[in-house]
Length: 286
Image (tube, rainbow, N blue to C red; front, side, top):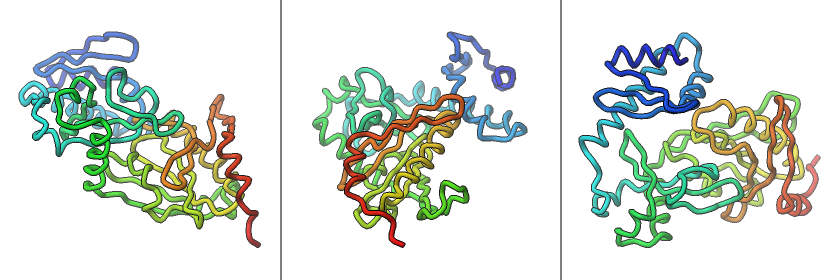
C-alpha cells in the first residue's frame, strides 16, 4: 500500500513525508495529509487490481480539497454565504474533536454540524458559531433541513439467507447521500419500522444503514445478526462510525446492545433500556 502511495505521489510531482505511524504528508503544489487507515479501509473492499486507481482517486481528491482551501478560502463570518452549506451527520464519539459543534444523540453516537464544500467537508466550531446570527439549536435544525432537502436515500430489502436469518422479516439497506447517517434520526419516515413504529438499526460506516423492523421478540435474532454485520463492517469499511446496535422508537435513537469483537467473535450486551422494551413485546405469531 505504501509503495502504491509513493508511486501515485511521484507521478503527480509530490513527495511523501511520514509524520507519525499511520499519517503521511503529501508535499507538492497543494500539500495535504492522509491517514493510512483511510486508504487501508478503501482497499479492503476492492479487488487488488483496482488498488492503484483507488489510491490515485484518493490522492486526487486530497489535492482538489487542498487547492480549494488555498485558492477559494471560505469567508466563515459571512453566514449568508455559509447558510446553504450547513449539513449534519451522525458520527462516533470522537468525531469532530474538541471545540466542534456536536451533541450526543445516543450512547456512542454524536450529531455533528458540518460545512459542505463539495470536495471537502469541515467541522463547524464554536468559534465560528460565535460570529453567526444563529443559536446552536437552530444551527442543528438548519443542518437537518438541508440534509432533508438533499434527499436521495435509496432503500433495498433482502432476506438474509443464513441460519440466523430464518423466519425474520427482510433486512433494509439504506444508502445514497453523503449525509446518510443523519437519516437514522428519521427512520419513522421510511418503510423500515414494525407495527409499533420501531426498528433496530446499525451504522457501521457512513455509507450504509441496516435496519430491521421490530415485530415481536424475534428482535433478539435480529440484534444478533446485526451485531455480526456491524462488528465486521466497522473494522473493515471506510469511514467507520459504530459497532453497536441501536433501536429507533417514538422519534429517538437508543442503544440496544453494545458489541465487543475479539478474534472474529462478538460479545453482545443488551442495555437495560432495551431489555425493558423487550418485556413489552409478544411472541411470534404462528
